[in-house]
Image 1: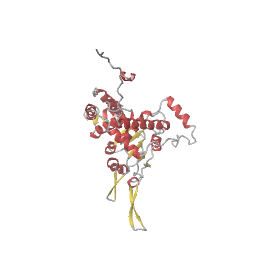
Image 2: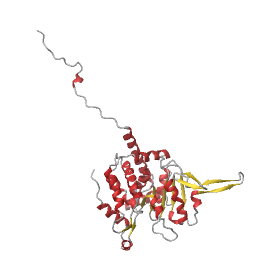
Image 3: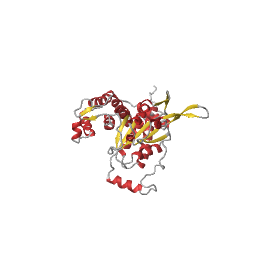
Image 4: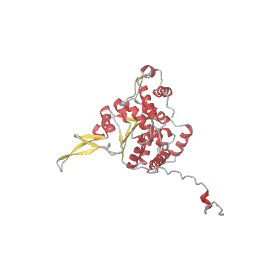
Length: 348
């Protein structure tokens, strides 16, 4: 009589259950991680040159990733121009600077046609606006006619010269500075131009410890009261910025978060104390900046906090305070903060 036997596996390891292998990261996730690491490396470089302004640096990088223009406001000596020069040092593309003055003409910004005696023809001479990063320094010192020279290029990324529409290099960002306390010899920016700036940043005085560190580093420099920006590493080329902007625009956005951004912008239009509210450009800017901030923090999708975190910079130049509140000394930021506290955020 044959005896039934259970055959044992010849390989002892075959009897041990093997855990399934972890799924490989998708190419999109790898791209996002690398983009976030590159953005954070850029942040660290800028923090080496501009001390005590970490929040402003984050907002500037948000606008860079979102592809929007920036207006930087602050009293003299806080490093507004230095911030833009530091960003230009980390960027391998073209950089131009225009010092806005009362006698600046629109053709000094956009360019003009000149007559060539040899060819006996008019030739177009492009202005400094044909660049990737344009620093419009003290933009409110030029009259309205010269300020209006930026309207077309800021919105349409092109300049019309002698009846020809000439595109500017991509990416194209206008980084403008202005002094909020000096009124003599300045011209307020028109509402149409203010609305073309994605963010309005306010640079405040640094904290005591940060100012001590700032003074220590500046006094080691041979250039009077300037920090050196030449040692900064060049981390980005034009194509890299375009790639980062594309990755940011593809980040997942829940419909509830989109609705939250629109509700914030719409709330400004009938909020007590605001005589003028924000238009649809504000809703668009909130979503674009929310995606950029999500990429900057290394996230895979946009959180309501990403929208809320950039709301003040998106809205403060698009709304107007009622005269009675202005007389009482209430600021636009205080009123907008009350609005943000009362607009309910979605729970994801």
